[in-house]
Image (tube, rainbow, N blue to C red; front, top):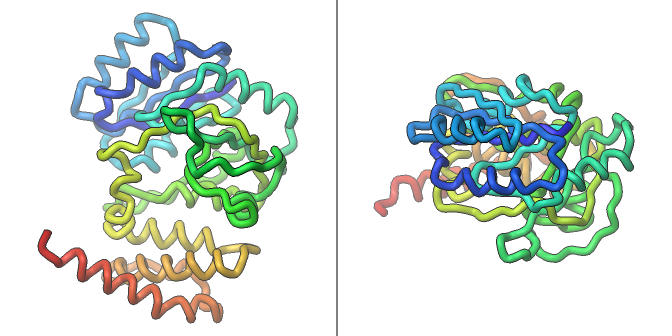
Length: 293
């Protein structure tokens, strides 16, 4: 069974799009697990009305506001499916999404070296998120998929529950954001993903979404940000990929220099070369933050 997991915060106005898409699924072999991260709108009442309709198996949990990464950690603990699929509250699925996921796992089998199966996302008009890049469906590391095939944009990642349980997000006191890249690159150290060149997930980036304010979130949650970028640098990665993320590590490390936390990045030659560039970006951030709007 697939656990369709949705973390949500004040999205009652748009969550019905996802609910309706789940009702339309050709295969109903899934549960919809919702973790409400402290919404102050009518999300709880809305979900309760859907549960009463009994069109979809819904399990709803509410917690105090702590950020998407904490909601994901809670979702992983509560999930009953063996496949975990994060679907954001402002997105929705194509009608055959669950069917394609289950069919794909039947073909891949239970190879634990493959952590999960990743599909493509599309915009509401049907165009591919990240552009129309052609590739053969195959198993590879996330880094190779991104770097060697030059694939950009968000993906529709599904992952085995037994794998994702091994990689919980760090929960730093006082911070409410950790980049999702932390999860995928943690998994990437020991597992491959199977990538399928088919769209199953519809994404529309909204002004109140995390993507629209990512830079500010990285700056105001600097310890989690440095942990995530250190994870992206770790391991056998292309040199330019490691340099780029080493620079970003130091950028957010300087944002966090007044906090007491250990270095997450080793002092390699590449890391040392990245320090002045990261510091330059930190200074730029600081100047822009102080500039009048």
